Image (cartoon, helix red, strand yellow):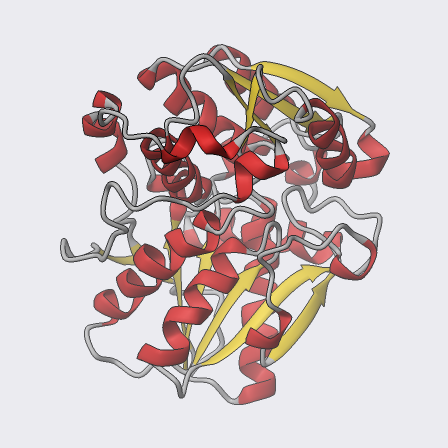
Length: 343
């Protein structure tokens, strides 16, 4: 059996320069007096922490057995990030910008998360010395909760039936206490898609080495990955078609993904960037995650399975020959789920 061919990212990935402010939005959400930000302040020494440079440059792996003949499918393996998921990118950008603005000293970072962004925040908080409070749906996997507690994060569990929307509503309630919390608000923070516009998108094109990219596919959670990469491709590779993937119904088992028609739509989401919008069933995604493990030797999460289901479907519909998708995390965070045991 052939293994997946992996290409390393090039070193010249574009990054938002340290010191570029994230703007006023997050502190306004928290109801904090913005006048304090107009006063000069010394640069936070934590901006020089090496951990902030240990995100991005993830491998691009070509799948060997699952795609049909004549179609190349390559996946960004975001589990290779220091914190184990694609969310390291957005969390790093949000935390860097907050440090530049002087938003963190004396306050806890607060956000809603289905798990991966929270893990990235908690990792950064442990290393950089700030406390983290996370509103987490009760449906989040046991592995994710254990990782968060290992990093020392405070977890406030919300109704599992309300999914990420319930966690968002609870975080917004807590964010009213602006003296205690800095509300990072990944669902509205422009640093989220910007992180992907300036890193993930350029990495993909660099790793392709000039090869034509026919189709880009990504799942929708906060929408940051899809929106950011699509913005970069819109001007750097305008012939590339772009497809978004989401659950096919409001009640689903695809952790981290949103059914946009029935959910709180992230403020940074731009549906107009998608040439195709695809719905994927939970069972389809779970089956594909199993196939990735057993046929490609890639232990990936169920959202990666959903991304691949969408990538193959979009390739059929568009006739794409070279397709890139994003595998947000590894399967280790979901091994307690029973679907792995199915034949």
